[in-house]
Each structure stands twice: as C-alpha cells, then as structure tokens.
Image (cartoon, rainbow, N blue to C red; front, side):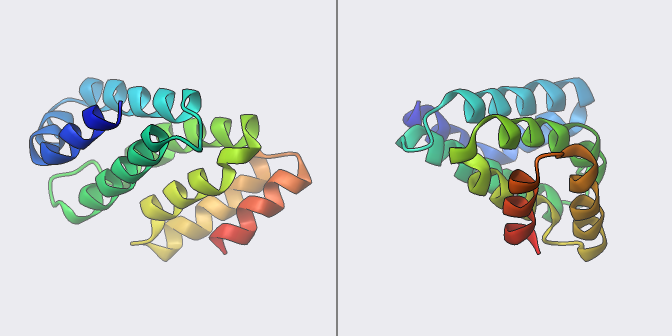
Length: 135
C-alpha cells in the first residue's frame, strides 16, 4: 500500500487535473482516501503515507487557481473526517492535522469549522481533543 501511495505522490499534478475536471472523480478519489484512513492501522507506514498524501493534496488544492477549494471540503470531506474522529480515538489527532491542512490558508474557514465541531460532535472529550488541536 505504501508504494501505491508513493506512486500517487509522484503523479499528483495529473491527479489534480483529473479531479478538477469532474466533481464525480473528485468525490470518488476523496472517498477512496477516506476509506484508507478509516481502515488502515494508525501505526502503520501505509496510514502515515496516506495521511501525508492527503495533506499534500490539500495544500496543492489551496495553491492551485483552478481547484474547487473550500466548497468540496466543507460539503463532503469535513463530514467524512468527522466520522473517523468519532470512530477511532487513535486517529483523532491525525485527522485534526488534515482539518488544519484544509483550513490553514483561511482563518475564517477555520473559525467556521471550529464552530461547526460543536454541532457535529456531541461527546465533550472528543470535542475538546479536536478543539485543542485546531485552536
């Protein structure tokens, strides 16, 4: 799995052009990455490679002029990431890193995400863990 993710990193320009061209491709590819984050052991090299690729992709999307930017993150990825945060305590800080990667370019977006956490995460210990990382 690690070598597969490393190959994706090498071809990131082609991947971004493909996912920018079709919202369907964007949804499928992002869902695939979230599935990997959900299923892989957080102590494995494959999980770390997948996490790093997701962060690299988030930064690239923020830098590119032609990207879908925040719209896809707030409408799809954010909720998928929240599911992982709720399901697996061992992955919370890692997924918070991804939330930060998607919002680091825009303080207003990060504030909105932090405020939305209160609506979507009802368990106080989980909420405070996420808030501590993002604030």
